[in-house]
Image (cartoon, rainbow, N blue to C red; front, side, top):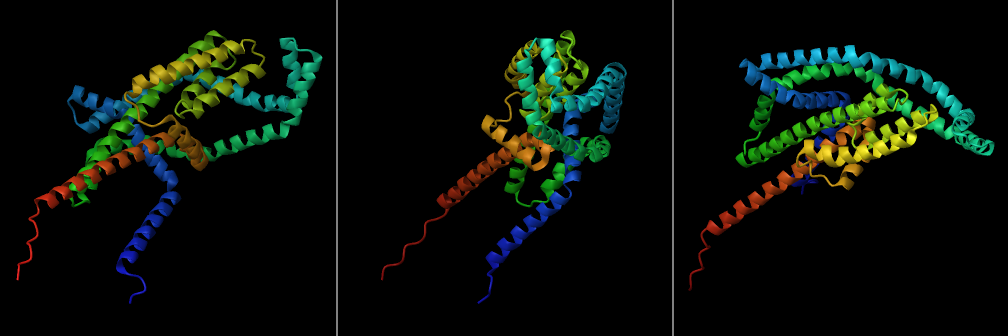
Amino acid sequence: MALIDKKTAHVLFTVLVFAVVLALAYAARKMLIIFLFAMLFAYLLEPAVSRMQSWMRKSRIQAIAAVYLVLVLLMMLFLLTAGPRIVQEGQKLSQSLPALSERIGSGQIAYQIGQRRGWSQETSARVQQFLVAHRAEVLSRVQAYAAQIARYVPSLGWIVLVPILAIFFLKDKSEFANAALELIDSRGEQKFLRGIMNDLDVMLAKYIRAQLLLAIFAWIAYTIFLGIMRVPYAFALSALAGVMEFIPFVGPLITAVLILTVSFFNGYPHWLPILIFIVLWRGVQDYVNAPYVMGEGLELHPLATIFGILVGGEVAGVMGMFLSIPILAALRIIWHNWRLHQRVKDQVNQGIDELAPPEPKPALR
């Protein structure tokens, strides 16, 4: 008798293959993330490329080149107009943060704010004691966030690869899909895989374009309001609000905390209207803009969305938060198509059983 039968050996080999694939994916996670962002960037440009190709009546590669040229011109226009103001305010804000954190940690800022807002000496002293007592906790959190951000700085150079790799996705996306389908011989399995790829194609296109539009809406809204209210570092904070909109749930919350914190500790007196605006804007963005640009949505329960974002943040930080929603939606699509595939197989097997001739009765002796 063999020590391990053939079926058990097959299962163990399959588990080993999956373990090796996961280990390789983890080792090459940075490049996989670059490829994923290139694919998302390609989905973002796909409508413009298709329209440009139809309008120019040229080859697809020429349409891609034209879209990239327009994109470069738009970026240059942005850098020449709003860019210098955002960079200037961002530099001032980053330079003021060390001195601000020192004043917060020592409690000195309590008396400065108290003088501007008419606090009593006793109230200022209590606030100072609170800040001094929690100085170590505040500094540790700030250092942890700074260290997490610093981990992504060396990888910024890889961002240059994103638009380059996106060209290949834009040019040969259909060929990639056909090559993947040719690896499978069964027609039923090909249909199953094609259904998954079509649903993923629609979902990713809808998600990335919706996120870009929501980020632009947030940037415009915050720029107009903070500029009118003369909030310190309005342009830099508005640009940050637009970027943080790409991180669902957590990004807008960080934006609100940062704007209120910078405004309060810089002595801005009208922080209550800012709080009211943020609450009203979240209502408009989440219940008017998001359903409109997202269409039918990703069909994810809010609790599952929050859970996925928190898990993604624990696993991969900011990148995990950003990618958690499309990954959850992709898993839902795969599960949905698998159930449909299994249902069709069961119906086919049931039909075969019904069409099969009845077994002959044994002859009577």
